[in-house]
Length: 621
Image (cartoon, rainbow, N blue to C red; front, top):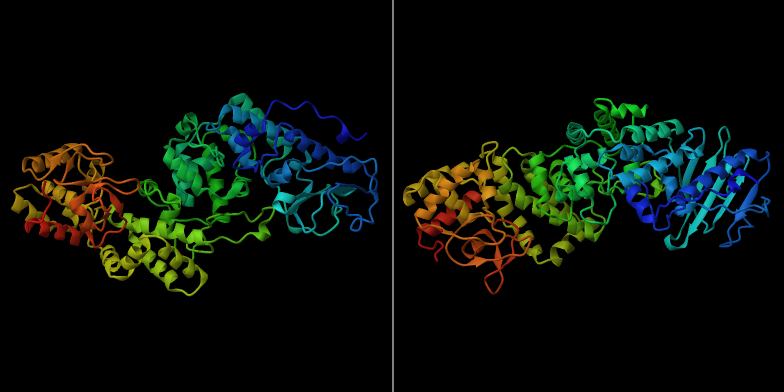
């Protein structure tokens, strides 16, 4: 009896859910993984090693009953006493051969839950005892054209095929023994790639496991997160997830990180949710990124600067696989998260930041993956190949345009790129290819489509982008601060109403801006709470505003007159200002129906609002 036929030890108590939770995001763990999958992988390893005992020329074939392949394998003599060995877990575990770096990083991360850490350590410990961790072996993965399942071996190696009827494909895997040339196989596989062996020799894996169990997880390094973000263009929360081995990636539970994990990483739920979407590059993409970022000696992780050195290697791998990108300011990325588009905040920012020729993959697939030849190359966010991509792009671009102009300061790189972003959008819409067709369909399909089209073509967009390009706004100032964009008007309002310039500015903001919350006003105007309160008291004393508490307003002062409620993400507002700023109310008049784009520049809207007030058409109770 061969050693691979011996009975495996009793499996540890470990269900499929625990395995998916621990390995997910780096290893594709389908439902067929169960408590015996680790042992089944070990058994496959023993079967591969057992090929060394075969004499030259000796071959054995183990066919499944799914399909007779005698015509293809007629030259091989099947072993009637042989025992069929099939790939466990639908063969998905073969994707991580040579890619243990990410799992090792997850095992050592302080952001990994203890119960998950133990499962990862068990996996690494098991893997270290198999030939899959031995760089002397050569492994290849791919697919076969024929729908068959088998395992075949001779003195040079082993090959497996597993037909997956639900996926209409046949997974292929082969192991070539040290010094051998090729494993036996019935046909040349399709889309086959070599599993490049990076970090993760048996010695490295065992040492890493020992260190984690002896010393516990490494110390978290927030500075390394910032450095990784700035070197790659990914957001800080995304950099934190990568540096922690992507804990929780792929989880369907919201929030996908628990309180302990969030506390270690130092970010909010919404920020981490957006970062997870930003890293939607597939399990193979994440494992390829982290395959070789671990130190040669795992003990270096626990030395001062250990995690920072991992960040440096990760940044180099990111640049090689995905290309380095500009990093939006941290405050800009945080503001983009609040836009709540279907595109992650980082991708919204990079719609503006990236040059037309930059390769920015949305669904990144690594160059060294099991089916890499079937996958498209890197694409920019502007590449449209499907209808839903047109919807995502238009929603993100228009949300970004509506936000960047009034809500980002002059000099912000996202805001400064607005004119270029509009130019690229117009070029796409003017083309005669399929992408343009998808975009026009999307514009026509939604109620906002006509308004978006009009905004692009009636001169409004040109006036706003010209305002951005003019450089008239001082760096660091906001267009939403009338003191910065219409100082002469501020003086006129202050003199006419007997107000200070601060109170005049706040009055204009309440008249025009869709969301003049206390937090926004203080940010736009660089006011302290005390200075803000003083301006409010002036307006209250002059009876220009009323005090109240209203849902989702974020402020206590309001223009007199009726109020329109709104459902997220639309902003509630005073009914008086709705037609002025391009918002439409429902027939009842007490709820905002739609609002997205300002109908003119803010200097023009501030001026028009004051004209209405001076003409007796201002807001009244």
